[in-house]
Length: 356
Picture 1 (cartoon, one colour):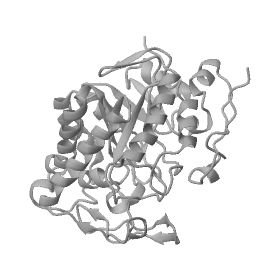
Picture 2: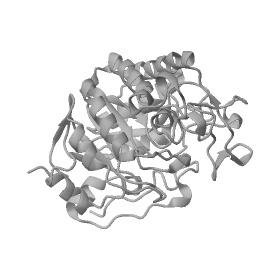
Picture 3: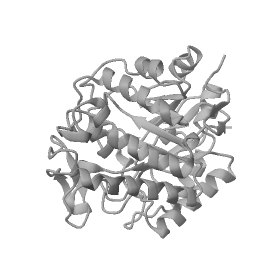
Picture 4: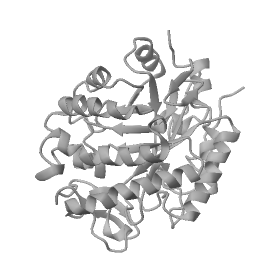
């Protein structure tokens, strides 16, 4: 019977355990979105995870949502990420890069005054974005034209090529959390007509085109996809998240992906429901679950066959040796929330390892 600590094969990747590290934006890149040496240390510290999924990384220039997040569109960024992958591999780890377009979560103050883009001209409400001028409200995005979408797909393909050059073991396409691909997927943000709006199949068209392009670079056995059908972060909602995940999970089978990574809940508890059961029923490959798992619950979910692995976010953030702590049933460090998005080592590389 599989457990958290048993090996797993997903696609063409073999991992020694099923304790994955979820992608975690930490804003430690430099002003040119180049990964820094402190990021090298951070990821290397966590290399014992079955798979590290690196943070949301800009697939193409001009789509910043967090100010100091990394990119993968310049030679300097590729070189910076190569230091990260080399350090993780030297520790025996495996690391995928999450490639991403911020969509309407981008802000002109982060992107040389350029208006953000989205499937429809609907802004994020009730929240603010960090900018060089302090916190600012989100702005209304410009609705993308259909003839602009091939350029988005091409940007993801180039990002996949750059991720390969940077030495990653694969890539995760970010289709979650209210960013561009998720905005197309969910009917609260996508009010389009035509090929990319209306039915779930049409709303998933851009995601599938991106996956096709990325798989042409990597082979589908080194490509994963992340979805968050319930998460209301970034003003997201869908009228029928269970049907959405059921339909999209079935559509993804044609790609023979390395995995599907599903966020099972909502950060803000606005939308509730079981999206893992329909994901498991409809997706025929490796299923990774995420959000709020304890070690015991994750162990039981894997033993029961509900999921194949669990991605841990804040526990991995605060515990670089998380697999060893889980195995020893040792206490966990508490995450320092105040340092999640601040520069420097505090709350990033200074969490103490388990006592010997």
